[in-house]
Image (cartoon, rainbow, N blue to C red; front, side, top):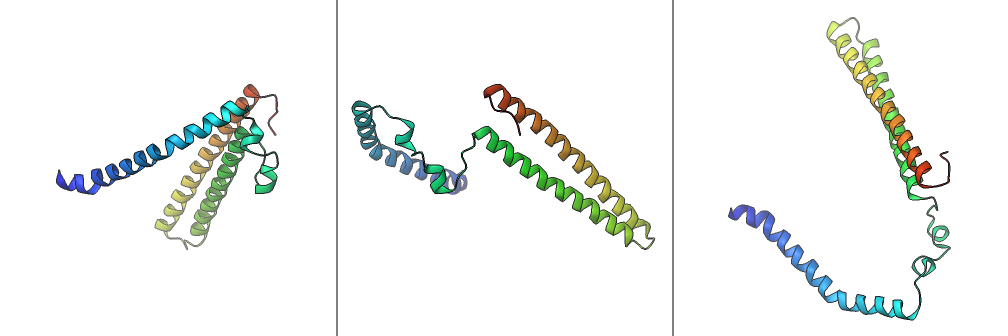
Length: 145
């Protein structure tokens, strides 16, 4: 029990105490600042982020759903490329097997595994496209690209 306490519980407890202490020290100033803003004026979006924020930082101005959909499409595209490379690698092993049954069997297993992976990736792409498209269509008036 003492090893577990020394290795895990003690450092986690120290971090928790530091975080709570930091929040306790910072909370009064944050509360007074928030009260000053709320009593003096109404807080608008431009108070938090200026209109030129996305242009100045180089960030895009698409909504979150479209951004997540684009990231998922890019990741699935990358995985599809990897699956095709695996299939090509299996074909290369088969071509250079020089009649060895063990190498041919290994190459066939690699090709089958790559084809199964590609089928899973294509299924994931179809499901993702449907779900993201449905979310975008249901929550906004924009259409899916």
